[in-house]
Length: 175
Ligand code: SF4
Ligand code: SF4
Image 1 (cartoon, rainbow, N blue to C red):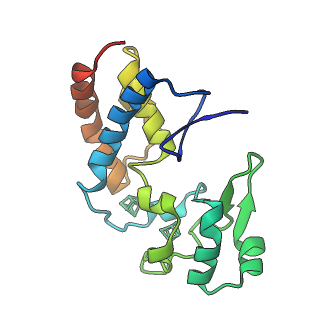
Image 2 (image 1 turned 90 degrees about the vertical axis):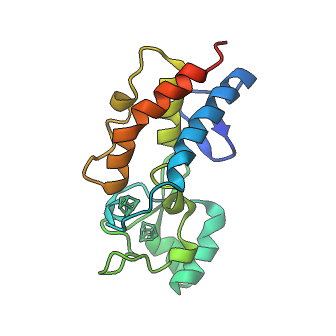
């Protein structure tokens, strides 16, 4: 099944292509997501290192195996699982095999891109912000209901996102 992919990495569920009009709204959604990235530092609570969807890109496998000091064959068989839709995930996620007892990542410099992007710039968040921008009936707080308020980063997102979306919608050029 063909999926729309924005900026080469944001998989937009339910969409097959990105038109120029959609691209403009996606750019606004992306800007909102990225506005968080530099704005608030991770508190290293380690909660996101204890959840099931830690995606590894195929091109990251060698690098992570090397950083972890694990022979490639063992890494692929013991640490990675392939999903039915072809994605690669860490097998051990509660906690992640690379989280130490002080909640520090043992492969920090070489961690998967999704760990660096989490939670501000991942597909699910991007898609939800896009829907809120383009659909008057959509409430961004309902759309990001999956975010756990007890996490420091998502708590900030949930308390500030509605205003960011409201402003972006006011500036939006209607199709
Ligand atoms: S849950 Fe958020 S604040 Fe906690 S370690 Fe992960 S990104 Fe940082
Ligand atoms: S690789 Fe590092 S940052 Fe990513 S989930 Fe594991 S311990 Fe956390």
